[in-house]
Length: 157
Image (cartoon, rainbow, N blue to C red; front, side):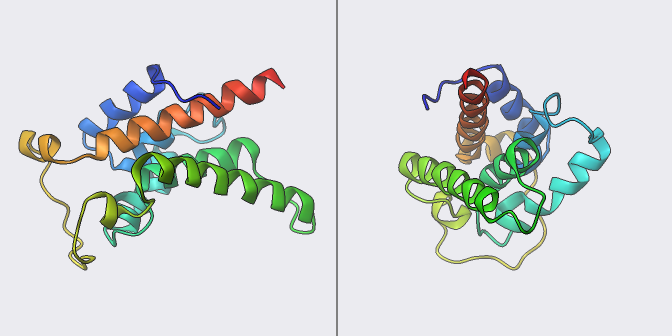
């Protein structure tokens, strides 16, 4: 699966720069293929995952937004279908590994080079300085491009 930057990657970055969190930005960039969710519901659903799960600095929100969209597109719904569940988990692990290969980690705190996690729930103000010092836009672009590549690959099959 080749990852190339595209319209969705650019759109996800724009959404982030408008103030949406990383998970919201990646997920909403695919709203046209994650049918059935209106904007309000989709953005609320993803609002918990910014900052590595509510600013806990755990799994990167860009990756979480990617995973949520992949679940809607390719997930399973039958709890007894072990084969589909395993196939879906393999896909999620593959995507996580692609992200980790690119950036060295899937954890927000590692990606932001933080010594420890924070329990401060108050997000930093979204200023020009914030955007200039945060590497998050790159993670968001990559996550969206990775999902776009997956969609294109699956359409060929």
